Amino acid sequence: MAWTREQMAQRAAREFRDGYYVNLGIGIPTMVANYIPEGMTVTLQSENGMLGMGPFPYPGDEDPDLINAGKQTITELADSSYFDSATSFGMIRGGHIDLSILGAMQVAQNGDLANWMIPGKMVKGMGGAMDLVAGVKQVVIIMDHNARDGSPKLLKECNLPLTGAGVVDLVISDVGVFEIGGSGLVLTELADGVTVDEARKRTDADFSVAAEIAA
Amino acid sequence: MDKVFPDAPSALNGVVKDGMMVMAGGFGLCGIPEFLILALRDTGAKDLTVVSNNAGVDGAGLGLLLETRQIKKMLSSYVGENKLFAQLYLNGELELEFNPQGTLAERIRAGGAGIPGFYTKTGVDTVIADGKEEREFNGKRYILETGLFADLAIVKAWKADTSGNLVYRKTARNFNPMMATAAKVTIAEVEEIVDPSELEPDQIHTPGVFVQRIIRGGGYDKTIEHLTTRERA
Image (tube, rainbow over all chains, first blue to last red; front, side, top):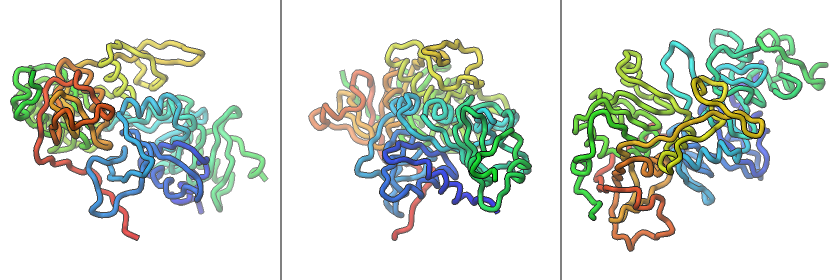
């Protein structure tokens, strides 16, 4: 037993606070929008130039001039705003966005993140990821704990080119939740049915275990 | 002076030459100058350096200029979704300079505002920082990025008045306003050209000083890359 993608997204949504401005990456991070707690105001930023991103449109209501950063059709809300790319990244780089949730290829125990490039393979580009991790106040990673070949993604050191150095605050994987802070990498939550031993077997990074789950 | 031209080919007349740097607005296929890209292809100009967040897709947008091998170098942040691009790049037929998206936007904004360089924390300790000056401000590290200024900018807006004031629509705005400021000649293509009395001065996104030529494009494709909908409840 381990967390499903939906459960990982649900867990990530617990990082939301009332009034937060949030940027969600493509893939599982996008799903986190489905779990905004009732009664909480969370405003979604789309780095191509929109604050207050609404849900996908009903069939027939789609507008080619209204897309998100994943180039999917979306809708606007009553309090939405549009702006150019320089203003958008001014928001991001200037520290006005509270939370960024992204995927990852590798995360190191010191918070280094690699999620844009595999040398020798065709590189698609970093898009806005380097700006997001450099500028947003809190960076949360959602990822499968291991790669498809089973190799660990939470490492002592990244060996892929970095997106940012020392930028990750929290990692949510199918195994559980890891915090990165002053005391290094700490396993703070375990997914249902996962043991500390199993977490260690599936992880290359050194980590300590929070008192609540060490027992 | 009349800024309004009858069509895209006439607007490009006299401003296109081999080896020039062209900025092209748009994010994916949203807010791209469809008609000016087609007309630029038909000029046959080659060895172009093109600044654009993306490189179009196969058969649309800047993908059309890749088919004809008119682009020598791209400055972009993301070039997925384009098989021909990958093939040309891997064959060494196309140069590519990746810029983080925010750095690209700010380089264009700076270039248009007469700012030759700026410091940013984006890319510190990554390959993006290689060969760039690094400097500390208040104990934090930043790298020097330079402004960009092109020979020609082709942008897409929703409406223009005959003085060149522009208004964009929704997320089709993206890189267009900065690019309009950052070139020797800026040509805007729009869906509607109106009398100046019809645009509210308080609602102008790009003031007319930045725009030298205007055309109206008719019958936009506006291809949607990922049509995504939800079910009606």
